[in-house]
Amino acid sequence: MMGRSLIHPRVEITETLDRIYAYRMTTTSGGNISVRDENGDVWITPARVDKGTLRAADIVCVKADGTVEGAHRPSSEYPFHRAIYRARADLRAIVHAHPVALVAFSITDRVPDVSMIPQAAHVCGAGKMGFAKYELPGSEALGERIAETFASGPVCVILQNHGAVVGGGNLQEAFERFETLEFAAKTEIKARMLGTPRFLEAGQLALAEKPRGILPEFDPPAASTGEKMLRQQLADFMRRGYRQRLLTSTGGSFSARVESDTFLISCTGVDRRGTRIEDLALVRGGKVEGGKRPSRAVLLHAAIYEKHPEVQAIANALSVNATAFSVTGTTLDARTIPESYIFLRDVGVIPYAEQFGDGRAVAERISMRQPAMLMENNGCLVVGTSVLDAFDRLEVLESTAEAIINARQIGPLAVMGEDRLAELKRAFKLS
Image (cartoon, rainbow, N blue to C red; front, side, top):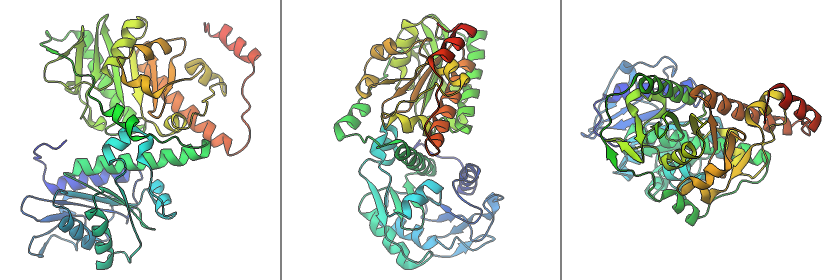
């Protein structure tokens, strides 16, 4: 997402803050965002303006010579934005906010360990987290403290008793890091409620970084009405999955079968929140539609479609609660309520190393008889007989995972016995 931006900083900041506020990752008065443009001017959110009603006209410009243009005063935290930009010439955007999971880390003098999840490590930088000791908010001393931390290399910094600051080469990148860091923090907290999180070693993270899913290209014919319908469904459910917090802006993939050897799949490098029909790649016979970068999970999806003709849609997801199970090795027992068992059956686990091959080992484990699996340290995988069916299973999986985590704080689970499971199988014709 490092391309040439045509969006004015005022608009870009307003839209990003609206997104952060809508997902309760900041409060009415908390947090601030800035962008440094090519002239060295810094565009920043104003002081004491409601974050829920912010308009583009409210954004303030602090010129390179220190003069201020705008209807308001710049954020009281402008000093640390300025200090970070002076310390890091590579950073062109900064996001600071107080999302609850990151605040929890900030008030316990700890940083989230993003090596728990490959995507989080990739986006935020494994081993590159920073921690800045407390200084008075808005003070020059705080700016110096934070700038010193950024100068040592990290792009994500937890502020003691004060939330987090994240930088990026542009605002989209900074937001993606911020969102992913919050996701990692929430997942680690939920995982610790289940047991002990399993963190990945450098070699395991390197395995996830190896190039995969690179296919030869082809020029597809005119799209059939069936393909057009599936494109619309997939795009709609990708956006819906993001709204439901089943996907992050950078994590998660969805596909749907068009014909026996042809399917559509989401693309890498596309913000899941704004997925459009043209952001999906057509894959046929081991080749991909020209000019598209399919999800790195494309070989896995292709192997599942080849192995299981009845599967019509597949979703990988990074949802907080299911991912918490995936990083602890704790069994996600779907024998909790009838709907969970009907939709999920016995939820298995796909070993970490199997996820990065040609997909055939994974295809052997998942089927419509076992349609939901945890991906060790990598979220979950579901299959369905339609796009809606796969999405429904994904929602049920995440809801079940959250209910179990909550229930464990109350008492032992009262799961359904074999007699009730047998009754369900008969009534709903489950094989």
